[in-house]
Image (tube, rainbow, N blue to C red; front, side, top):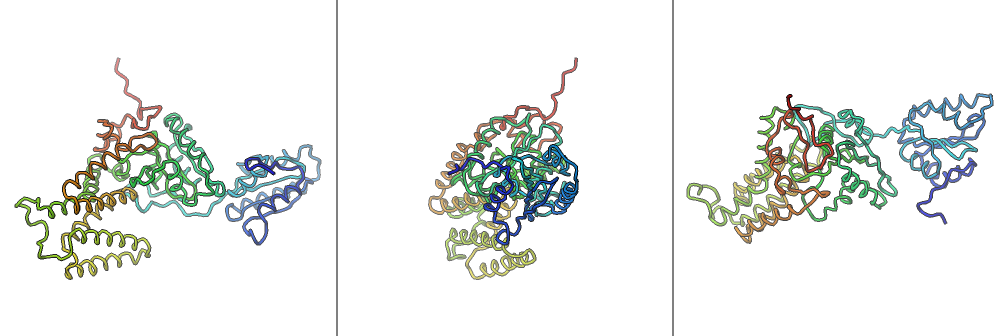
Amino acid sequence: MQKQDEKTPISADISANSQTMYRIFDFGPANFDMGERSIKILGRESKIYYTNSLMDTSILVVMMREFMRLSNRNEHVSDVFQEIKQHLVHEQVEEIQTIDDAVDRLLTGRMIVLVDGETSGFSIDLRHYPGRQPEEPEVEKVVRGSKDGFTENIIENSGLIRRRIRDPRFRSDLIQVGLRSKTDVSLCYLKDVANPGLIKTIKKELQSIKIDGIPMADNAVEEFILKQGWNPFPLARYTGRPDVAAAHILEGHIVMITDTSPSAMILPTTLFHHIQHAEEYRQVTISGAFERWVRFIAIFGSIFLVPLWLLLVQDHLLPSQLSFIGPDKKDFHIPLVVQILIAEVGIETLRMAAIHVPTPLSTALGLIAAVLIGQIAIEAGVFVPEVILYTSVSAVGGFATPSYDLQLANKIIRILLILTVAFFHVPGFMIVITLTIIYLSHVKNLNTPYLWPFIPFNPTGLYNILMRRAMPTSVLRPSIVRPLDKYRQPPKSKPN
């Protein structure tokens, strides 16, 4: 019995190779998009294998014409294999020695040529994956800047990054993950900038993944290499913008591109990477800093606004000057915490419904929820107006969060704060905040502290988080990624 890790060599007998390929693929109606063609090349029986759905058939026709031209030649050729190789009119031709390599490459869209009497074959890259044109990501739109974005094609995605980093030291290492799916995963980085220990760690984690397939692409890879468990806060930052990915590569990060996924994973990242947006760097410095602070306030409000309002109203902590805040006890019959939870569930249900309905209907859905359901619920006494107001403001603050994963994590923390405030009042509020900070301070993402530069404290890094630094003054790369070259710009030489 052949061991699982042993590979079957290509036989010199073309009929034996044909039987093996038939046994693997079952060519015919049961496997309609797999093709096989028998042809004589320079007097030798040859087999050509291809996948219709994953290749450019126009180039296949050109290759077939060249083979037929060779088959009409009558002169004697001493080395048929090399003669065929010289006439393969394509820029990417690879010699293969095993049937396993032929099968792997055939399933990625390459054409395989096997020649009778030869123990090697040819793999010709004719891949043309079905997909869409690069478009601006829906959740990362900018007023100014490029409007292209990643697609489900790993080759196009790598090209979008390489177009922005024309450096011979840019690397795009390809690793296959999944025993059955054999999904391509590319690690993009600068060889002389990215930390080699980090690259080695990520490669080791990828190679240790033993699963039949990863149809959910980068999300499945993330769960294997980051081992997040029940932590709701995102450990990896996703982006659909090639300019954002290129900017992080230049800082010393590693960008992971997974085939069939329209987003790239940035590693390693901290909590503060998830609250930055490309729009801040597409505006002048002061405008970018203003947008960043407005976003900070929106995120802060999405977490603490509703719990603080409930705490102040429930425990009567408001001063007399703010006595107008909060409803009168005669104005409601359902406890405030129950109203808030119903509103939170309703807003989340509305968001989910908007995703599953066609775009022209999503506007009508919002009007129904806002005008009919909200207004009638207030008039019927189910909600007090302030509950609708503050939960809506919190929802808007959540939508202002650049990272969708962080938005969901903040929502979980907000609901936890609401429940603890309802049952344990001020002590519960303080305990949950303290425990959350302590927990996050112990979280590490690929040996990177999650709360850096706040914990451990780094003044330069914290300044870069709080303020949008102008590019001419951004000389050093972030120290948290431990880059080999710490300078983004050549240090100014001192005058003689």
